[in-house]
Length: 398
Image 1 (cartoon, rainbow, N blue to C red):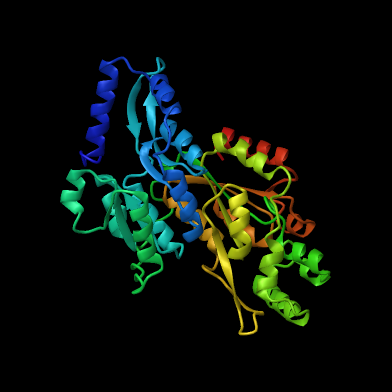
Image 2 (tube, helix red, strand yellow):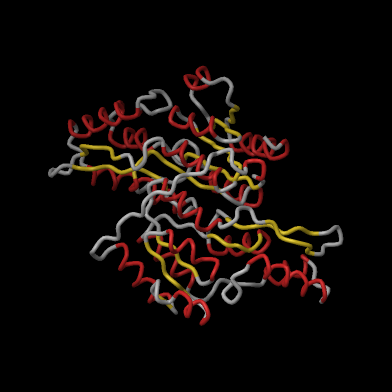
């Protein structure tokens, strides 16, 4: 699509070329298996995670290409399309998971209260770049540059791309947010949802709960109360702020103490198992970025959905800033609008709305309070049970 803007026409041409030359799907897989990311790409993405700790990769190509390349890049979420294949292994067609998926992905993330920088190289990327707060052409063909070079900055190497991103993120004047696009109804095209996506809470599922961990480090037993036991999160955060001030613990002290937290035993092994089963997974946390970002990195997830904490002039916590109220449920809905079927995994009262909104939901190691309140939700008490529940959902389709 760097040369031909009509993707359907291009795919039919490619499939015809493959057929005439006797090239089957397995032949393509063999070639793809030896492909490596572009030189400098991995280093750029490592740099980017520190500057913008929310990164999503999308491709209009097919899963057999996307999965191994995304894996080499360290990205667990494969947004892509599909191929149709004959019993003899011949590629016979392609299935668009969602037409104009890149633009719609930008609009979904904007409704989730993110400002988006979109980077692309082809005609298929122009609509998402126009929808985003900032758009950048990278390694674009002469034909694309001629048609759209006047609309977007053009980069030919990763150092230039870093500069353009810093221009947007760090340097005034601030880029204004785009007006939100009215979402499509959830039932729209729901009959065509095929690809599964896992959306999971982090604390209690893959990482220790930060506040009980902090309570253990400081000896403040009252910090151990969580939304496993108390459904009113705002009130809980006010209590935590009071306790920190009473014990003269600043937010900087909190951040330093929590840096040493590691994922729960077995979490990374489970996520490694999950990748080929459901090659689309996102993590979400109602906790704060200073806890979430290092844990997400240790779990190999570069997309940090979280909230924030604010301090006063003395450095004490005064406010918990909710980036988007009810973000977990809304995230499920936006992924459904992107034509994914969602499996939601959580452990606390705050996770129940997203679990009930998803096609399927699982409570992981829930407290008795939650299981008594929601006996209708399936549970898993360890990672092996969680694997079994996920396979049951995929096998039955619900």
